[in-house]
Amino acid sequence: MNNRPLPDTSKARVLVVGDVMLDRYWFGDVTRISPEAPVPVVKVERTEERPGGAANVARNCAALGAQVSLLSVVGADEAGQTLARLMASSGIDSSLHEDAKLNTTVKLRVLGRQQQLLRIDFENSPDHEVLRAKLAEYQQRIAACDVVILSDYGKGGLTHITEMIGLARAAGKPVLVDPKGEDYARYGGATLLTPNRAEMRQVVGRWANDDELATKAGALRLELGIEALLVTRSEEGMTLFSAAGTSHEPALAREVYDVSGAGDTVISTLAVMLASGTELPHAMRLANIAAGVVVGKLGTATCSLDELRAA
Image (tube, helix red, strand yellow):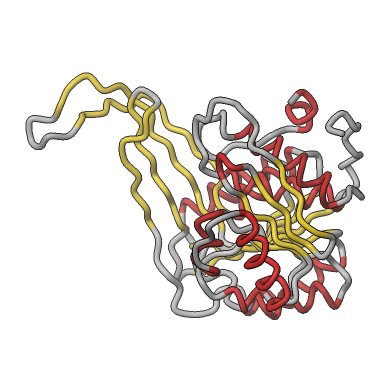
Protein backbone atom coordinates (compact mmCIF):
# COMPACT_ATOMS: atom_id res chain seq x y z
CA MET A 1 0.00 0.00 0.00
CA ASN A 2 2.84 2.40 0.81
CA ASN A 3 4.35 1.77 -2.62
CA ARG A 4 1.57 3.65 -4.40
CA PRO A 5 3.03 6.54 -6.40
CA LEU A 6 2.65 9.95 -4.81
CA PRO A 7 -0.03 12.14 -6.37
CA ASP A 8 0.78 15.19 -8.49
CA THR A 9 0.83 17.93 -5.83
CA SER A 10 1.74 20.81 -8.15
CA LYS A 11 -1.92 21.79 -8.67
CA ALA A 12 -2.85 21.55 -4.98
CA ARG A 13 -3.79 24.98 -3.56
CA VAL A 14 -3.64 25.32 0.22
CA LEU A 15 -4.61 28.36 2.30
CA VAL A 16 -2.96 28.51 5.74
CA VAL A 17 -4.34 30.91 8.36
CA GLY A 18 -3.17 31.24 11.94
CA ASP A 19 -0.51 32.28 14.39
CA VAL A 20 2.96 32.73 12.90
CA MET A 21 6.21 32.91 14.82
CA LEU A 22 9.92 33.12 14.19
CA ASP A 23 12.18 30.34 15.50
CA ARG A 24 15.73 31.50 16.22
CA TYR A 25 18.56 29.09 16.98
CA TRP A 26 21.90 30.02 18.55
CA PHE A 27 24.42 27.19 18.18
CA GLY A 28 27.63 27.08 20.14
CA ASP A 29 30.13 25.10 22.12
CA VAL A 30 30.13 24.56 25.88
CA THR A 31 33.53 24.19 27.53
CA ARG A 32 33.04 25.71 30.97
CA ILE A 33 30.60 26.58 33.73
CA SER A 34 29.92 30.24 34.49
CA PRO A 35 31.72 31.64 37.58
CA GLU A 36 28.60 33.76 38.24
CA ALA A 37 26.10 30.90 38.56
CA PRO A 38 26.07 27.09 38.07
CA VAL A 39 25.11 27.34 34.39
CA PRO A 40 26.99 26.42 31.19
CA VAL A 41 28.63 29.16 29.15
CA VAL A 42 27.71 28.86 25.47
CA LYS A 43 30.13 30.45 23.01
CA VAL A 44 27.80 31.15 20.09
CA GLU A 45 29.32 30.18 16.76
CA ARG A 46 26.38 30.44 14.37
CA THR A 47 22.73 31.47 14.29
CA GLU A 48 19.77 30.32 12.24
CA GLU A 49 16.24 31.61 11.66
CA ARG A 50 13.27 29.48 10.58
CA PRO A 51 9.53 30.09 10.23
CA GLY A 52 7.46 28.69 13.09
CA GLY A 53 3.78 28.08 13.86
CA ALA A 54 1.46 28.62 10.89
CA ALA A 55 4.48 29.84 8.88
CA ASN A 56 6.12 26.43 9.37
CA VAL A 57 2.87 24.76 8.26
CA ALA A 58 2.94 26.86 5.07
CA ARG A 59 6.60 26.00 4.47
CA ASN A 60 5.84 22.29 4.90
CA CYS A 61 3.03 22.52 2.32
CA ALA A 62 5.38 24.28 -0.12
CA ALA A 63 8.09 21.63 0.43
CA LEU A 64 5.56 19.05 -0.77
CA GLY A 65 5.09 20.94 -4.03
CA ALA A 66 1.77 22.70 -3.33
CA GLN A 67 0.79 26.27 -4.17
CA VAL A 68 0.52 27.93 -0.76
CA SER A 69 -1.06 31.13 0.55
CA LEU A 70 -0.52 32.32 4.13
CA LEU A 71 -2.71 34.83 5.95
CA SER A 72 -1.59 36.10 9.34
CA VAL A 73 -0.62 39.11 11.43
CA VAL A 74 2.87 40.13 12.61
CA GLY A 75 4.24 43.03 14.60
CA ALA A 76 5.70 46.07 12.88
CA ASP A 77 9.16 44.83 13.82
CA GLU A 78 12.32 43.20 12.53
CA ALA A 79 11.08 39.67 13.31
CA GLY A 80 7.96 40.25 11.22
CA GLN A 81 10.06 41.48 8.30
CA THR A 82 12.32 38.43 8.64
CA LEU A 83 9.29 36.13 8.49
CA ALA A 84 8.01 37.87 5.35
CA ARG A 85 11.43 37.41 3.73
CA LEU A 86 11.61 33.72 4.71
CA MET A 87 8.11 33.12 3.29
CA ALA A 88 9.00 34.82 0.01
CA SER A 89 12.18 32.74 -0.32
CA SER A 90 10.04 29.57 0.06
CA GLY A 91 7.76 30.66 -2.78
CA ILE A 92 4.78 31.27 -0.49
CA ASP A 93 2.20 33.93 -1.29
CA SER A 94 2.02 35.46 2.18
CA SER A 95 -0.20 38.26 3.38
CA LEU A 96 1.32 39.22 6.73
CA HIS A 97 -0.54 42.25 8.04
CA GLU A 98 1.50 44.46 10.36
CA ASP A 99 -0.05 45.43 13.68
CA ALA A 100 1.88 48.09 15.62
CA LYS A 101 0.39 46.93 18.96
CA LEU A 102 1.70 43.42 18.49
CA ASN A 103 5.15 41.90 18.95
CA THR A 104 5.90 39.13 16.47
CA THR A 105 6.26 35.93 18.52
CA VAL A 106 9.90 34.82 18.64
CA LYS A 107 11.18 31.60 20.19
CA LEU A 108 14.92 31.69 20.78
CA ARG A 109 16.62 28.37 21.43
CA VAL A 110 20.19 28.19 22.71
CA LEU A 111 21.98 24.94 21.86
CA GLY A 112 25.33 23.69 23.09
CA ARG A 113 26.79 20.66 21.30
CA GLN A 114 23.42 20.14 19.54
CA GLN A 115 21.59 19.88 22.89
CA GLN A 116 18.93 22.49 23.67
CA LEU A 117 19.93 24.27 26.88
CA LEU A 118 17.40 27.07 27.02
CA ARG A 119 14.37 28.51 25.22
CA ILE A 120 13.40 32.16 25.55
CA ASP A 121 9.98 33.34 24.27
CA PHE A 122 9.23 36.91 23.20
CA GLU A 123 5.50 37.54 22.76
CA ASN A 124 2.51 39.53 23.89
CA SER A 125 -1.17 38.67 23.69
CA PRO A 126 -3.12 41.06 21.49
CA ASP A 127 -5.70 43.19 23.30
CA HIS A 128 -7.90 43.13 20.21
CA GLU A 129 -8.93 40.72 17.45
CA VAL A 130 -5.97 40.99 15.12
CA LEU A 131 -7.47 39.16 12.15
CA ARG A 132 -11.00 40.55 12.38
CA ALA A 133 -10.41 43.16 9.69
CA LYS A 134 -8.88 40.53 7.43
CA LEU A 135 -12.04 38.41 7.06
CA ALA A 136 -12.83 40.03 3.70
CA GLU A 137 -9.42 39.01 2.37
CA TYR A 138 -9.88 35.56 3.90
CA GLN A 139 -13.13 35.11 1.95
CA GLN A 140 -11.41 36.08 -1.30
CA ARG A 141 -8.56 33.66 -0.67
CA ILE A 142 -10.95 30.78 0.18
CA ALA A 143 -12.34 30.91 -3.36
CA ALA A 144 -8.86 30.33 -4.81
CA CYS A 145 -7.88 27.32 -2.69
CA ASP A 146 -8.71 23.60 -2.43
CA VAL A 147 -8.12 23.12 1.31
CA VAL A 148 -7.94 25.48 4.31
CA ILE A 149 -5.62 24.87 7.29
CA LEU A 150 -6.35 26.82 10.48
CA SER A 151 -3.24 26.62 12.65
CA ASP A 152 -4.13 27.64 16.20
CA TYR A 153 -1.24 28.30 18.57
CA GLY A 154 -3.36 30.25 21.04
CA LYS A 155 -1.70 33.59 20.22
CA GLY A 156 -4.93 35.43 19.37
CA GLY A 157 -4.84 35.25 15.57
CA LEU A 158 -7.86 32.94 15.34
CA THR A 159 -10.34 34.43 17.78
CA HIS A 160 -12.99 34.29 15.01
CA ILE A 161 -12.15 30.73 13.99
CA THR A 162 -15.79 29.56 14.18
CA GLU A 163 -16.76 32.17 11.60
CA MET A 164 -13.76 31.24 9.44
CA ILE A 165 -14.75 27.56 9.49
CA GLY A 166 -18.33 28.48 8.52
CA LEU A 167 -17.19 30.63 5.59
CA ALA A 168 -14.89 27.91 4.24
CA ARG A 169 -17.47 25.14 4.63
CA ALA A 170 -20.13 27.31 2.95
CA ALA A 171 -17.71 27.62 0.02
CA GLY A 172 -17.39 23.83 -0.07
CA LYS A 173 -13.77 23.74 1.10
CA PRO A 174 -12.43 21.14 3.58
CA VAL A 175 -11.08 22.74 6.77
CA LEU A 176 -8.26 21.10 8.76
CA VAL A 177 -7.62 22.49 12.24
CA ASP A 178 -4.59 22.06 14.50
CA PRO A 179 -6.34 22.79 17.82
CA LYS A 180 -5.23 24.44 21.05
CA GLY A 181 -6.70 24.70 24.54
CA GLU A 182 -9.80 23.09 26.05
CA ASP A 183 -12.60 24.87 24.16
CA TYR A 184 -13.13 22.66 21.12
CA ALA A 185 -16.68 24.01 20.59
CA ARG A 186 -15.09 26.82 18.57
CA TYR A 187 -13.90 24.23 16.04
CA GLY A 188 -17.42 22.93 15.40
CA GLY A 189 -18.17 22.13 11.76
CA ALA A 190 -14.54 21.64 10.72
CA THR A 191 -13.65 18.70 8.49
CA LEU A 192 -10.77 17.33 10.54
CA LEU A 193 -9.02 18.12 13.84
CA THR A 194 -5.45 16.94 14.55
CA PRO A 195 -4.92 17.02 18.34
CA ASN A 196 -1.89 15.32 19.84
CA ARG A 197 -2.27 12.88 22.72
CA ALA A 198 -1.88 15.52 25.45
CA GLU A 199 -4.32 17.92 23.76
CA MET A 200 -6.91 15.15 23.34
CA ARG A 201 -6.55 14.19 27.00
CA GLN A 202 -7.09 17.82 28.00
CA VAL A 203 -10.49 17.77 26.27
CA VAL A 204 -11.90 14.25 26.83
CA GLY A 205 -9.98 13.11 29.91
CA ARG A 206 -7.83 10.01 30.26
CA TRP A 207 -8.55 6.67 28.61
CA ALA A 208 -7.57 3.21 29.81
CA ASN A 209 -7.34 1.52 26.40
CA ASP A 210 -7.90 2.00 22.66
CA ASP A 211 -11.58 1.07 22.88
CA GLU A 212 -12.22 3.80 25.42
CA LEU A 213 -10.31 6.30 23.29
CA ALA A 214 -12.44 5.33 20.27
CA THR A 215 -15.62 5.86 22.30
CA LYS A 216 -14.47 9.27 23.54
CA ALA A 217 -13.30 10.30 20.06
CA GLY A 218 -16.62 9.24 18.54
CA ALA A 219 -18.59 11.24 21.09
CA LEU A 220 -16.42 14.33 20.53
CA ARG A 221 -16.75 14.02 16.75
CA LEU A 222 -20.55 13.91 16.96
CA GLU A 223 -20.71 16.70 19.52
CA LEU A 224 -18.64 19.03 17.32
CA GLY A 225 -20.18 17.97 14.01
CA ILE A 226 -16.78 17.21 12.48
CA GLU A 227 -16.04 14.51 9.92
CA ALA A 228 -12.84 13.11 11.41
CA LEU A 229 -10.38 13.28 14.28
CA LEU A 230 -6.73 12.38 13.80
CA VAL A 231 -4.98 11.87 17.14
CA THR A 232 -1.17 11.89 16.93
CA ARG A 233 0.16 9.69 19.72
CA SER A 234 3.97 10.01 19.66
CA GLU A 235 5.54 6.54 19.96
CA GLU A 236 2.07 4.96 19.62
CA GLY A 237 1.68 6.32 16.08
CA MET A 238 -1.52 8.03 14.96
CA THR A 239 -5.17 7.04 14.89
CA LEU A 240 -7.94 8.30 12.61
CA PHE A 241 -11.53 8.31 13.87
CA SER A 242 -14.28 8.93 11.30
CA ALA A 243 -17.78 7.76 10.37
CA ALA A 244 -16.10 5.03 8.30
CA GLY A 245 -14.50 3.62 11.46
CA THR A 246 -11.06 3.69 13.03
CA SER A 247 -7.72 3.27 11.29
CA HIS A 248 -4.29 3.30 12.87
CA GLU A 249 -0.73 3.89 11.67
CA PRO A 250 2.06 2.68 13.99
CA ALA A 251 4.98 5.01 14.64
CA LEU A 252 7.85 4.41 12.26
CA ALA A 253 10.92 3.05 14.04
CA ARG A 254 13.68 5.61 13.57
CA GLU A 255 15.89 7.70 15.77
CA VAL A 256 13.95 10.66 17.15
CA TYR A 257 16.09 13.77 17.24
CA ASP A 258 13.55 16.56 17.75
CA VAL A 259 9.73 16.38 17.79
CA SER A 260 9.17 20.16 17.52
CA GLY A 261 7.09 20.97 14.46
CA ALA A 262 6.09 17.34 13.75
CA GLY A 263 2.42 18.27 14.17
CA ASP A 264 2.86 21.00 11.55
CA THR A 265 4.22 18.40 9.12
CA VAL A 266 1.30 16.05 9.78
CA ILE A 267 -1.44 18.60 9.05
CA SER A 268 0.49 19.99 6.05
CA THR A 269 0.90 16.56 4.47
CA LEU A 270 -2.76 15.73 5.06
CA ALA A 271 -3.88 18.99 3.43
CA VAL A 272 -1.61 18.71 0.39
CA MET A 273 -2.55 15.08 -0.23
CA LEU A 274 -6.29 15.74 0.19
CA ALA A 275 -6.01 18.72 -2.18
CA SER A 276 -4.29 16.36 -4.65
CA GLY A 277 -7.19 13.90 -4.59
CA THR A 278 -5.83 11.35 -2.09
CA GLU A 279 -8.30 9.54 0.19
CA LEU A 280 -8.00 10.38 3.90
CA PRO A 281 -6.65 6.99 5.16
CA HIS A 282 -3.81 7.04 2.60
CA ALA A 283 -3.17 10.74 3.29
CA MET A 284 -2.74 9.79 6.97
CA ARG A 285 -0.27 7.06 6.00
CA LEU A 286 1.81 9.59 4.05
CA ALA A 287 1.57 12.12 6.91
CA ASN A 288 2.90 9.48 9.29
CA ILE A 289 5.87 8.83 6.99
CA ALA A 290 6.56 12.58 6.62
CA ALA A 291 6.45 13.05 10.42
CA GLY A 292 8.97 10.21 10.74
CA VAL A 293 11.30 12.15 8.45
CA VAL A 294 11.13 15.48 10.33
CA VAL A 295 11.59 14.07 13.85
CA GLY A 296 15.02 12.93 12.65
CA LYS A 297 15.97 16.58 12.01
CA LEU A 298 16.83 19.40 14.40
CA GLY A 299 14.18 22.02 15.08
CA THR A 300 11.24 23.05 12.93
CA ALA A 301 11.90 21.25 9.65
CA THR A 302 10.18 20.09 6.47
CA CYS A 303 9.84 16.87 4.50
CA SER A 304 10.25 17.29 0.75
CA LEU A 305 8.48 15.20 -1.90
CA ASP A 306 11.77 13.44 -2.66
CA GLU A 307 12.30 12.61 1.04
CA LEU A 308 8.72 11.33 1.28
CA ARG A 309 9.23 9.19 -1.80
CA ALA A 310 12.49 7.79 -0.43
CA ALA A 311 11.00 7.06 3.01
